[in-house]
Amino acid sequence: MAVRKPPVPPPTAPAENGSEMGPRKLIRPSLSDVRRDTGPRALRKGAPPEQTNAESFYYLKQMQARTAIVVRLVDGEELRGWIEWYDKDALKLNRENAPNLLLQKSAIKYLYKEEEERQFRRRKAKAEGAEGGRGPSNDDGGR
Image 1 (tube, rainbow, N blue to C red):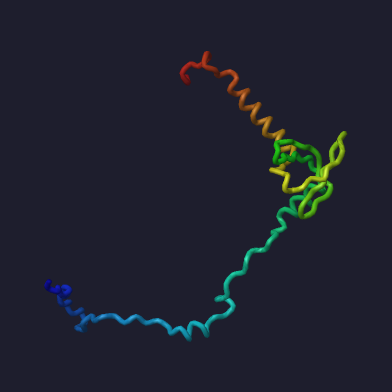
Image 2 (cartoon, helix red, strand yellow):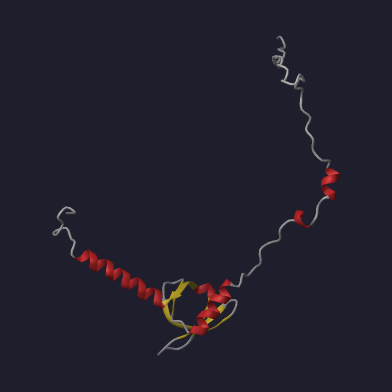
């Protein structure tokens, strides 16, 4: 079997200034120079903090305002009240005409302000009221 030689590139035309373009040499710093230049900006960024305090800020704000809260538990149960106290793993929910509860945060699916629920219901009722006059029987083809 015959060995093939790699193709030879065609000769390059000289540049306008008369010098020929030859193979380029890659210029890069030596590894020892790079290691010496490691300063504070070259250090790796640390892990983010475990707690951003956003949760604490939210709970404190709701506690001070005694905001009515709806808590949805993992099992689907819904509780209403206001937050009196909280810590890393639990929060205390005060309720009217019912015993106060100490809830484990792991049992909470989500929580929201009771006011948001009222606003949602108003928007929903308003939208249904606007659509109330438009039904399949009263449809005039959009005219």
